Amino acid sequence: MHRRQSPALSTLAATATYVLVGCSGSTTQHLDPQNLAMTATMPAAYDDGETQLFESYVGVNLPVRQPTPQELATLKGAIGPFDHHPWVTIDDIKCQVTWTLANMDKDPHDVELLIDPWNEYGRYVPGVSQVGDNAAPNLSGYDEIYAVPGLKSGQSSRIEHTISYDDLDEVATDFATTINIFAKVIPTPATATMAADDPRIGLVNHAFNVQNHSGNDPLTDHYIPAVIPALVGFNLGLRTTEKANLVLEYSVEIVDEEGNRTVEEGSHVATLQAPGKTYSLAGG
Image (tube, rainbow, N blue to C red):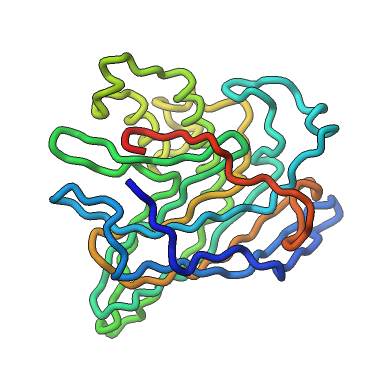
């Protein structure tokens, strides 16, 4: 399933605010608001003749500083399932996303808001799984459906929400759990070609389900790694089952608990970029 980049794709602006908080050296950075658009002219990202999915995505890189060679040398060794100790963990970096979604059409839409996480080890790409004659997208790291009124409804055609620090800590934990599932659950050659029988699909979708919380889940808790890498970015997306004209305005707030893991927007210091390695289920 191809991901359509929004025509409003833009980078986070260099004029974001950067403030010191408290005496510990902790910093909070408020990145400038950005827009993600979906237009009715976009072709379907997925179409099997029965189901159509329309999607628009933007990549959001968090301004997490690359470690120096000296800093890398001080990191502890491999800690399963990772080949080295994380440079940043959820104790070091926290973020939240505040957004406003506007429906530009007269009729209402059910809109899925999606976040697919990145950490320093890889990116999550959900893919689509075939179950019998039906195909369905696997869950994103954050995956919620919102009913957005239309312009002719007499109500506001805008809705607002904040995906909190705790929400995104859970996404980071679920992604680390997913990486461990990929390391420990190896499909047999027979199930590898049968998406519905790949045991990783059920486990990963269960981990990412917003109703299931890490630390209170007997099915997947034993896959949670001892150390949880922080998010270094994510794909932010919109999905509908019909053509739509939508605008999402979003802003990111990031807290650096150590005060030395992030850089001010516009700095020339190198930051961690989206990793090349992907973790994907069937159809990714």
